[in-house]
Image (tube, rainbow, N blue to C red; front, side):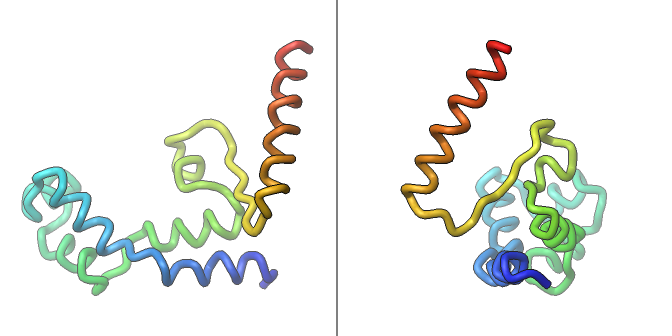
Length: 111
């Protein structure tokens, strides 16, 4: 497995889908039962997602997105513009790339 992909997959340990899901559900005032009904699953399934007992398809989808170097939004069709993640760029490299992209987009708009 290429080093970049290994590094991205290892970032998985930093992100906890279960905690994020529970926080989002609670912040939106949804009980586990209400959320489960809207999702079309049992509240026990939601419990298992929120406690890392059962992986959701999202975990597999995240791995796919990392391997193909795009966002989940693009992968699932929520976003129509392609996203490329460039990890490990210095601030100088980021600024240079941003300048290039700004010039490139302007040139495309005039062509």
